[in-house]
Image (cartoon, rainbow, N blue to C red; front, side, top):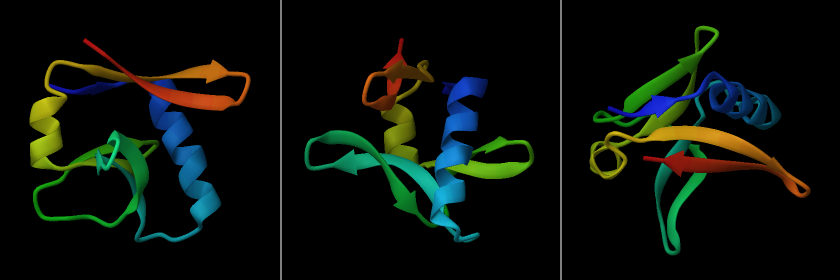
Amino acid sequence: MIQVTERARETFKNKLELIERPDVMLRIGRTDSGLGVFPDTLKDDDQIFEHDGCAVLLIDHEVSETLADTTIDVEEHADGAHFVVRR
């Protein structure tokens, strides 16, 4: 099971507010360099994470298996927030 901290959920929600499109959420998905976070729309096999009643994060079945038994959190750095995955 994937856990997403409240701090990470709030950060995802804040980033979504900048996009200003109600049909778009953030997705953790595969990129050329590994896993990344990017805007996307809902797909049939997505796991959905919410914050304050708003869907903020999507993870598809394949990535969900990769991230099983992890916690997604956020750390503040000089250049901004970075999402981290912990086992």
